[in-house]
Image 1 (cartoon, rainbow, N blue to C red):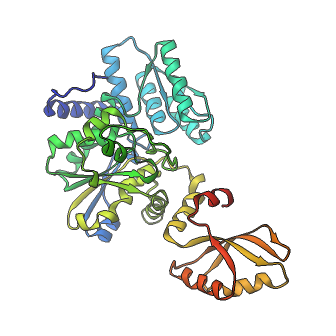
Image 2 (image 1 turned 60 degrees about the vertical axis):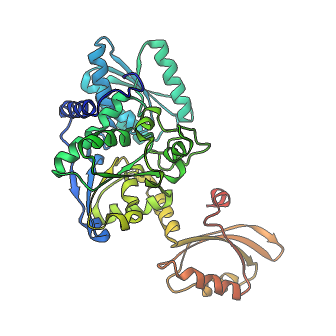
Image 3 (image 1 turned 180 degrees about the vertical axis):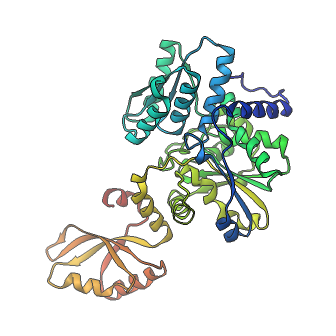
Length: 425
């Protein structure tokens, strides 16, 4: 890792370093595909291309930065043969793959709560080169244990994004997409978590394709770049929604922010977590593309950019495809709630024969009961019921609510009430 910052380093040096990293990466895998997407292009009236980092050997771009950082450190210090990281996801898998490639030892710290699927995949990529240690219930606890281990054992800690060599490795995405497209795109849409990918791509393309515009997309529940731009420096978010686990970062890296600090805040878009779920389902059902929540960020923002990209060539970086299909029911649920096709009500229902049938008669022809659960009797002759209703058209709900009001029902729509929904749904 080079000293930080280094304002005197020329743009040409960054370009050559990124190209050199790209050449070295060919020892691991061929360039990930850059594919034109007809569905999105027709829908948005633009020329939409997807840079498919979800099709790398570890199904994310993280292998690039991990490989490059490990390669360069071993060149500087051949005696270093032990690398450590803390991660519950894509960075862990990239580090594991690189350790096996270089024949060095890796120790990967993961929270005890890490899904078994991710543990198995990391172990598979690393083979005998990697040991996995499950420490702590939360990532911060795993991180502290990893850093303590490094200090004690003399191992090298591989940061997931706040590292110059990692950023340089992620820039290989930009090297490939320019070579594959054969021209500079009008716009590149980048997902942002810790900022390593965005910084690497931006820094390279500022020099190699200065006419290209950029838009940056981060999860609404983890908007660390927006917070840093507002404050003029990286700040730690008070809370983070962990659903978009590949990009839900409480604090953007200092090194990435040194590159991104001049970004126009108006060019940073926030993607609601539930809306991202609809994008995941759309790409899965219509295109057969499997993306994790972070991997869908750039595509999710396209409708917001519709007025800016018509007739233009746009490249979206689909940054990862490590989607656990056990999450699919939750993704469907969130997507339906965002689109207005599903509502949850707490309904005060009379405790008498025929009361439920009377309620059912109020439903429209396309309304379906997806959940029905008695919560408690709120009075001698009434009970509270949690009821989930799905419909084919969101416009049906105002009519349903009008009929409930006319019939004298007492109810509360808790669909968007995070506190009540967290307890009841």
